[in-house]
Image 1: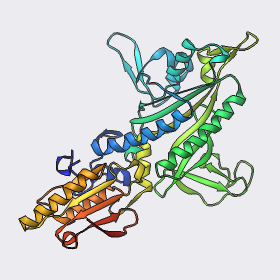
Image 2: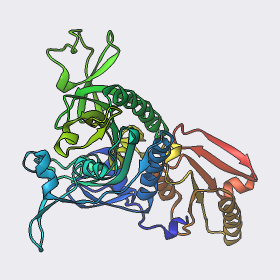
Image 3: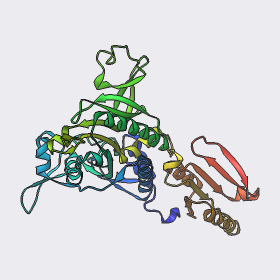
Image 4: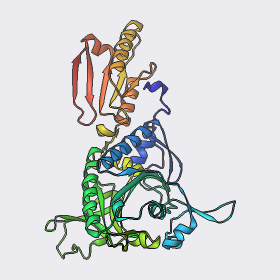
Length: 402
């Protein structure tokens, strides 16, 4: 991609109201644009990152045997009334339809997936099964803040699993837990499994937290249990087993998994006929990853004072190629010839081909956008018949012959 053609160009300064690192660098770098509190447009650079994150999730879930579907964002009121969440889910967007009645914007999809599975599956032979989607969610958050970490419209991967026994659910639950570790590792994050309360859906759950100073949550580690605990589970500085906990650390939640059991299956009478011909409620599991939130978390955990340092597997471009032009037209022609050749060979490259731009500005843009590798071609490098290669993360520079 030629930077001269990229929409939009990076801002010279971050927006004044951008407080978090992800808000500052994602907006300044031209990855996202804020439309209102908690609502963002994903621009070409940001969308490339988001799609790479989604692809990693798809690859790992498909390996587990999960199947991808896509459910609607508009939900019938009746479904939410059946579960009792129409009145109890306090951030639910509720709209009046012109054809009569009320509808909800999807804040979660248990109210859709459960009756959907009921319509097609009914024998113990149909289970277990795992169905997932990657779709936007809508929640009327009062505290939409911290850039893309907490929004009113946000991307979410939600996986739902269905089982005929608790033993099978627990076995599947642990398989997903291992898959989550792979997903976050591939995204360049060290996410620790953290014991938490279940909130709306279950008594307990497991969160995946990335330890970083900018985190919204506080987690504690028990050296005896070898378990991290969310602050909500901690009582008087002790874990649930009564052990003294270490000093708390700030962290960002990037995913959670919990056992719904029969909470939703009973509401919709989702059952399966067992080997003895008896109808038994299906047990469910739910596994979420905020995809847009994950992008923001990657930035929070991977940046310096100059901008983003993208892990290679999720970087918008692997290489940021820079052509430095001077006043000599003949030398500029040589610089352009060499950079064009490199551009044709190097795949997944962002090429800053702008002519009348100071080198300092090009370097600043490269640091801000944060591609793992920077290649520089200039009069100085060509005089030595070399190009300069810089590692964005380590800052190490090496010269390579051309």
